[in-house]
Length: 378
Image 1: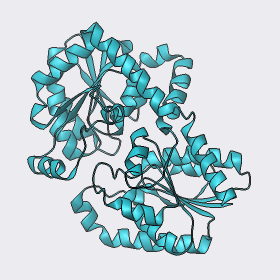
Image 2 (image 1 turned 90 degrees about the horizontal axis):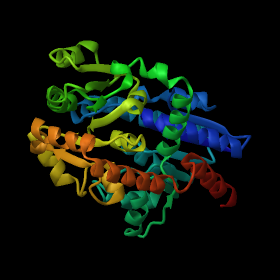
Image 3 (image 1 turned 180 degrees about the horizontal axis):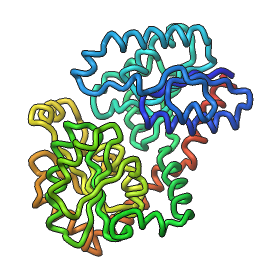
């Protein structure tokens, strides 16, 4: 069969590559064309366009690049039409993919969505369009099944692909001389606190300075910043220079979490990754006053952290906006480092979280099987 897969970000490339590997195990004749990255190409797909050509973040950047975005949409439609796939498989990336889904559905192409847009957080009205244009939706968060049920739309929960990704990383990392790997970190990997402040300059400048000031209150610990690979060295050097017990790594976030006693993490997928590494964490979020007020108005969810959203209770502490202070971070970090009862409860919650996310087994394999069965029985 012929599959056309679209992923527009690095995470989509990772999950898309694992999906492709599983599809090819089920369908030895699979012919796959994709928008994605190096990982999807290495898994055996023909790469049409790299996600690095598609990533426009922030309102101003999107407006500035509108001609390019429309050009990409037009080119994508023509390429799909010429290829005539048996199925169009869309991975997250809603701004682009939902437009392509509506177009493809009108032309009789079967549309499968893997990793739902976060319509439960904002723009809930987009569900109406999803129901019309998506033939099969595969979701990776357990509460999404119930969310869509409210809209009378049946979706399939396949588990979260990060469980498999992180399990495989741990297996390889701890089987390959981890003692020597730990030696590449300060203090031989002992008493490390991870700082994961995000990937965009604006968000880093709001949160990282506050996180760094906490380091002075923990002189026996070394704080390591996971740097965003796309930002220049000088940007971080100016921020980190005043602190003695602070250093940084780039493209080594999983290695860092493998060695960390605790972490200060900005909201997003990183909070979930940290939990799956069983690292006690404090979630830190701060935006501009205007952005924060707009977000409060638009976003209708109880928590900003995926861990808490999935568990439907506060498992990890969220310090948001004016609550993100050096004093509050110090108090919470002290608690997750030294309060035995707190640490035990957190580990118990993390175990429950992983069971919820991984109960379907290998999410990529489950998704591939569901897609293949759907296409061969419809």
